[in-house]
Length: 87
Image (cartoon, rainbow, N blue to C red):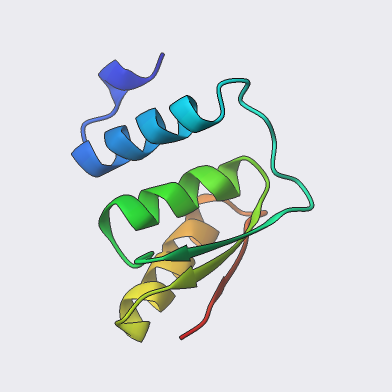
């Protein structure tokens, strides 16, 4: 249980949501996820969780620069992450 280690409320909510939706902690290898509102907040944290579980993630945000920054953050945090941005 990582709840006590997570201080960011958006990250905590995204982890809770992800755990709820994927009770068996299934992996997402060879799956592609498209996340809107991915530049910050819950959208960004959902992208992090998907990438950590092996999904290729397409980030979309109304502000292109936010999506690009988010993709760079995820790529930096998770060396093997497959992330792209799209408008």
